[in-house]
Image (tube, rainbow, N blue to C red; front, side, top):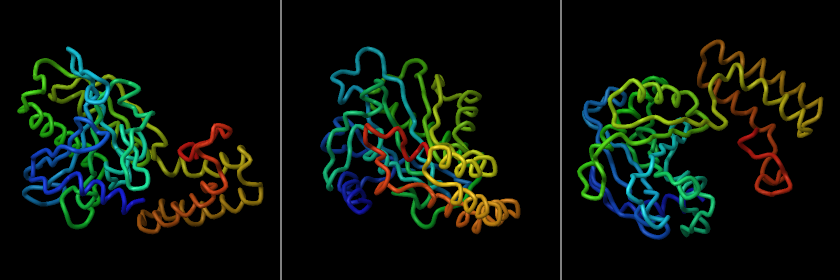
Length: 287
């Protein structure tokens, strides 16, 4: 799956130069991708780093954009270090990657809600952004970098003849998983900043905000939904206390990552939980 996704995205990108956009084929219609250069990047300690983006205008696959520009939705992957191309062809975008082929997604957020959607690879070393190894950054640094990206991307877009440049644009932010750490900070910076965007709302699914508060509830949730028994719940709680929690309280982040992530193994796998079937009320993101 991952190899097919990267191959499809690489085929679409070709050899796009920095800060230029490349038209994409198939079901994406007028969708395009490209790079934005962030100058004097304090996070990666480089003079210039590049952030890869993938944008799907609502009007391109809904017939007509109309007189008013569609609101913009920024989709944050989480990870941290998530690749936008994955979600663009896996969850909410206009396309799905199936057997190495991009097909139309009947349940796309842009198509259902009439929004433009923007994905990005977050950050250095993730997907096509920059190069080299991923860089660990704080939630505040990540949020500031996203806002810097938005400003540069909007300036890049304003130079195109088919983009309306008058007035403020309605803006939404959606994200999940580790994006729960910095999505609210991005919203705060947009509200306080000078970008030509009017923040209308944010949405977060399965956000990892405070592991010391959230992770202990996983076992209880699974038990109450009859997905694990009482014996397994006791084992889960013991493993959390002496592994995940201890590493978090000590600030041993490498061990915490391993110990806390291991607890996700208590969740049923797609092989024994029908996460997509209409007869089952649970989704993997619920867990």
